[in-house]
Amino acid sequence: MDVKAAVESRRSIRRFKPEALPRETIESILDAARLSPSGKNNQPWQFVVVQGDEREAMSARLQAGLKATQGKGIPTGSAENTFRIMREAPATVFVFNTKAAAPWEEQSVMERIFSVVNVQSIGGAIQSMLLRAQEMGVGSLWICDTFSAYEELCAWLGKDSLLVAAVSLGYADETPDARPRLPLSELVEWRG
Ligand SMILES: Cc1cc2nc3c(=O)[nH]c(=O)nc-3n(C[C@H](O)[C@H](O)[C@H](O)COP(=O)(O)O)c2cc1C
Image (cartoon, rainbow, N blue to C red; front, side, top):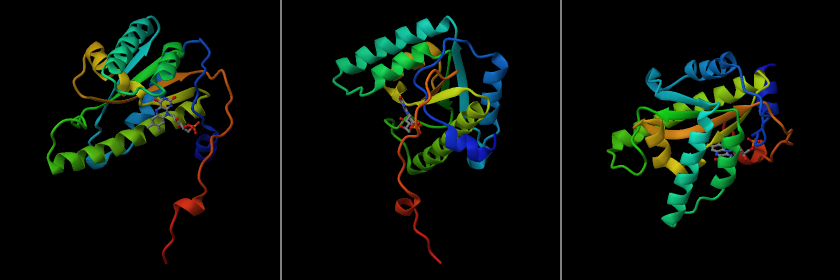
């Protein structure tokens, strides 16, 4: 599969087959992240793969976190559905930004700029993972609803860096149509 085909055929997958993914498959997907570009080659990423029996513990933390967030009156939007998907997906990769303060922490202007740079690096790395997964016939879902169970997840995973996202992986049990996109004409301004 060439890059164009991977970009065009990738979809967010929200129904996965229960079949586990071989470790080499997950490693190959993670290697695509490792090889991605990053600002000043900072490589500000770290990954925790949760699969098999560990998904039950993850799911318990997700539910506890969701309840705590809702208890504070903070809207959790799509998180309940996303957490169902994470429970069902054979594997979920938690993605940490090791070189950024959390957005809610005090930061100097320089720190804020570096955070913007590092978050771009992480976004690129995640996209590389999604495209490599697509090439290998693996469905994926990029997830930020993890912020609705942020403290519980970080405590459970034992990390103190910024948990920016998760990526659920597995063989797709659905074939969604392409979701709408704005036309280039609305997005691009040509000069010269
Ligand atoms: C940064 C980011 C965060 C996302 N977070 C979630 C999420 O928490 N739950 C979810 O179901 N989808 C999530 N998505 C998937 C988007 O909803 C999806 O990419 C978008 O609707 C377009 O659909 P497509 O990926 O099939 O093209 C996220 C996507 C991105 C890029």
